[in-house]
Image (cartoon, rainbow, N blue to C red; front, side, top):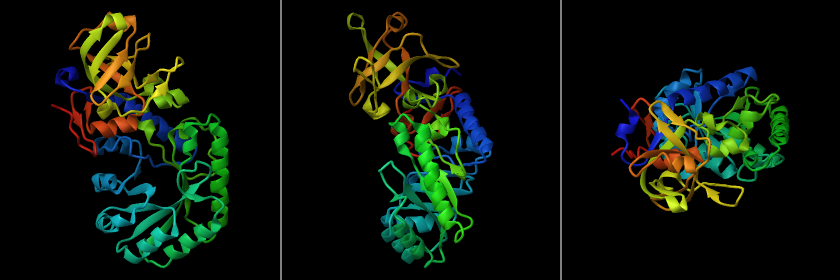
Length: 370
């Protein structure tokens, strides 16, 4: 079956071969550096793609919400870690979930761990998130008073066990010197391990960003890596040097609804509710919401001349088209769009269509297949 015959409206395509190659490559890199790969599943959010990952020896994953963790629970994972500062309003749901699935959570303050110590009725692991320069969330790496207080409270509950320290060096997304950022991250985690491993000999340290994990060559004595976007990659990662455009495993298929040759514009059904609104800036200052690829029976082809989505609204996408593109399409044809941020596009779409014509699940299950 030609998957294109199933598409009538915006549809997120996945190339299983490319996706598997991305997973395998990161798994091999983790093994080379003696790291445990615990990918962040906020990008894929899929049970089926999780089956692919387990074929490469991956046994644990990370999610960004308890909802994702619940969706993925009891599907073969040894541990699911929720890598978002834990929301104490969800303690009852955490207790319920942890009865049948090994779960760990992320802690950034003493108040939260105190509430967990008082209310958790099932064994739960916890990691302390550390801020080593990103500035978004986490305990500052030098705030030993807060770290000690969290650990002290954790000891008061038989159901809480300290697993280690987690750093998401997210500034690798906007600062060019990723090796320097990783040097600082390694130093922070090494210092924390040295300080606390005599009391917690089994503690582990983890990093969790795709740009750094993709390009770094020195991980020191870090124990675990937890990138997420690498499963699909996207144009932002290509722009950062994490991957090539040919490594991008998803593309949004969109129908052409109008062509204006004199303005070199193509209007497609595919806007902010499908792509989200992440963008890159072209050299001439124009916004790029995604680049165009030609959909073929066995996948997609990246054209020699770049065409890109220059503006979007809720349902509309307006393409700045090359002559190459204009000469090959007509109203009613399908085009593919490589996303700027695949995590957001996948979350917006809520389901995948494989190149073999198989619908693949997503935690949001929006089902844009009509």
